[in-house]
Amino acid sequence: MKIPEPRGSVSAGLLSLLSGQPGADPAGQEHLHELVTAQLRLVGDIVDDDDLQLALFCLYELHYGGLDGVDDRWEWNPDLIRIRQLLEAPFEKALRTAAHGCATPGSLPPAETLGSDDVADILFDLAARDSGPSMSRHVARKATLEQLHEFLIHKSVYQLKEADPHTWAIPRLTGRAKAALVEIQADEYGGGRPDRMHSALFARTMRGLGLEDDFGAYVDTVPAISLASVNMMSLFGLNRRLRGAIAGHLAIYEMTSSRPNQLYGQGFRRHGFGAEVTGYFDEHVEADAVHEQIAGRDLAGGLVEAEPGLLGDVLFGATAALAIDARLSALIMDAWDNGRSSLRTAVMADR
Image 1 (cartoon, rainbow, N blue to C red):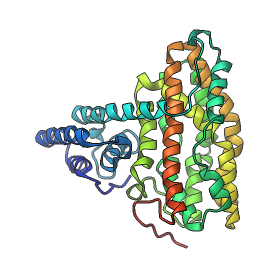
Image 2: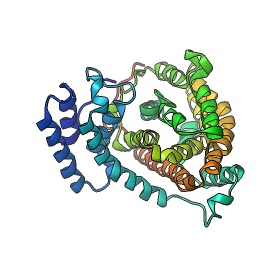
Image 3: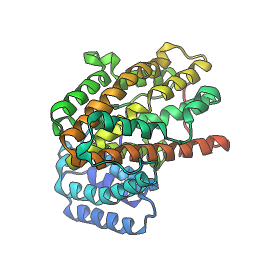
């Protein structure tokens, strides 16, 4: 990913540090730690903090495709890991607070008594009660061409590397849950066909609207909440103790995907785009109708059957996903309803 523009003292300090060699500037690393500590005392809501979310996004990206010109040895630099953990603690706390405010099931029987179908039913109930603003209906019926561009730009921060954060969970699971996750991920990665990888399908959609399709091309344009939605997945996926949360996240992600993607496809067809553009959405209508069953019953349900103590984390991952998605949708819809762009900076696409 290309190096983004800093959004404050923390992201500026981090990117400056990453421009050098690992371990070459211990004073700079200590200064960055002090900057993060000081900023965390001042921030109201870390989920909406542009500076801290960008810093966390860049720290996580070292574990994915890396940053252009940044030495790969930074990935496991102990001081950077310490700084990442410093940011993760309040971020996780904020996600738990957001999840607590989301619609949750009432009193549940002991996890030890729940079968995989019971867990799936709880998650399907959560998905059915999701009352966040419906961006999919707006896209289907009303979205302007410019709003379609913005919609894709927000989604590109994850969709151009779709499935990667959830893949971290594979070696952390066993048995039925592992097999289910591998089955889902195999489809996400195109079943062995690079051109059918979901990230490749989304890149084709971006190109069809004259947008750049390189991962991270629009990081500078999206608000903190868009970065937070991806950082949440990385937090869950990269921490073994949160393996239940990443399973719950994927389950609810699949359960709330099929119908919205059908509506998204309608919105793009309404503007005259054909299968080259709508293929990504059309693929998810069919695939996710199958994936939701596997993710709910075999992945999340199988995990809770094997490790009942993880039920709380499975529900945390699911409700946090719903809560953050609702906040992102509300931000976008509020901007569109009031005739504003939902992006931080204007984007000129090739028409």
